[in-house]
Structures are given as C-alpha cells and as structure tokens.
Image 1 (tube, rainbow, N blue to C red):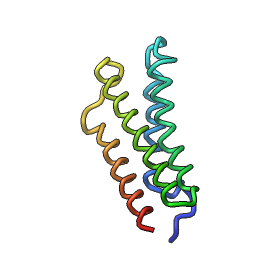
Image 2 (image 1 turned 90 degrees about the vertical axis):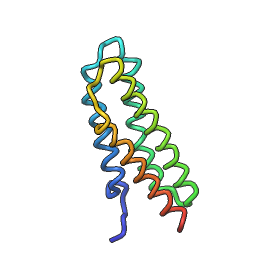
Image 3 (image 1 turned 30 degrees about the horizontal axis):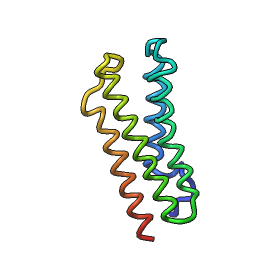
Image 4 (image 1 turned 180 degrees about the vertical axis):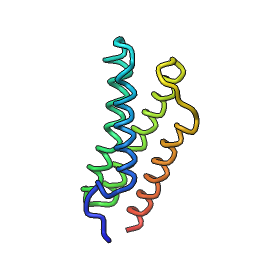
Amino acid sequence: MAITSFEQLNVWKLAHELTLDVYNRTRVFPNEEKYGLTSQMRRSAVSVPANIAEGFKKRGSKDKARFYNIVQGSLEELRYYFILCRDLGYLKINNEQLEIFETIGKMLNNLQKTILKT
C-alpha cells in the first residue's frame, strides 16, 4: 500500500507524540520560563513533525531530504533542551526516555536513504 499522507508515516506519528509530550511537560515549568525554555522547546518540538509533513509534499528527492535534514537539527535541539531541563530540575527524565530522539533520528535517516535512492 502506497503512503499518500504524512500522517501515515510512522516517524511523523512518533514525532507528533513527542510534541504532545513536550506541551504537557512544559505546562508545569516556572512562569519565568514562559518566553524562554517553554517557548524554545515547543517551537523545536513543533518543527519536527511540521517539517516532516512539509517535506512529504516536496516533489524532488533532494528537496525532501533537505527538509528531513532540517528535522534532524530541530530534533537535536529539542534533545538538548530535555537534557538542560533535567539538569535544571525542571524535568525528571532518564536515558531510556531520551531514546525517543535516537529512534526518531534513525527513522529519519532511513527515510532519507530511501528517498535519495529513488
């Protein structure tokens, strides 16, 4: 069965779940972080599934791959914010919980490889 929508991509589904998680987790951040970490984390989180969606509709494989590369950057940025928030005491997370970033990254790499082969 051919994939006809970005919503069918497993990597998008996982990225969307991560974004929802970020919104839930940042609700309890200190008010002083409203325009700091809360805003930054939410923007980078939204960027991941949004760029997957935008890249899905691009016609050329190089253009698609470029968008998925942008996703990789946003994903790493978000991973850093998780580490920072853990170290600041805003989030309680462990290394297993950080594996979501590795999983999404690997899925993106596979998607890029597949696209560039066509």
